[in-house]
Image (cartoon, rainbow, N blue to C red; front, side, top):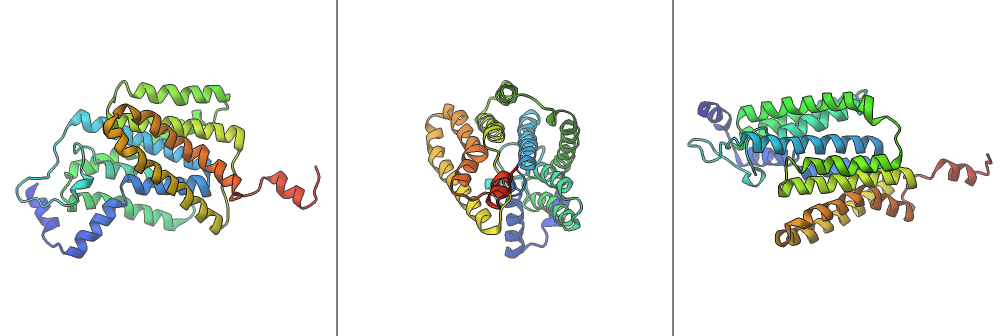
Length: 296
């Protein structure tokens, strides 16, 4: 194993170090949050909801497996050079970066499978992010391969579930009930600070989506300028909210659940409501036809 790391780390430069650190950062949670909110607010909210559900479920499963296997990282091993240690929290197997990429990009391929360039971009990101974790010396090869395998299985299983269950018609109260009870049941297995964060955001995001879809029916597709304004305002408030609650949680860890729920609620309900108030939204069909003098 030491020979393997020496072979891929034998030729390194400050430029290659920065490149693989950047590639690894692109496989971290802030990047996926940006991409998912971009999809949800501007392109396809229902696909964005399913993608967020899949990705968050995959990352929750990854956290459980890390605690279950409790595999130490290669950091500190003689002859292994480790960089970007701030991205190497928790145990080693499976690689969260590799599993996240193997979950996110194949599911996006499904939505834009007719556009071959996205296949090339996704393949590069999956392979590049996995290799970056090896180059940076923060994961074993088995961690990366395990992350790929689990991510692929998560996508396959979710697609089968999506075809059968998620398209079923159900009353609002039943959707809200599942949005509350299923994540809370997860806390029985993974009742850690990270678990409370994930569950809180999932509860807020899923409940907000169902409420928005029932009462607001936000129209996400807009031109470039309103889309840019929506993204800047939505992420700006979300970032400010994170900056405000982070020190509070250090003092009172129990606040993770309600505060993260508010963040999820803002993402799927609060932000679309504000976008409508600011008229950064594609008009409803009845509004467009009425403005043209068409009656029904």
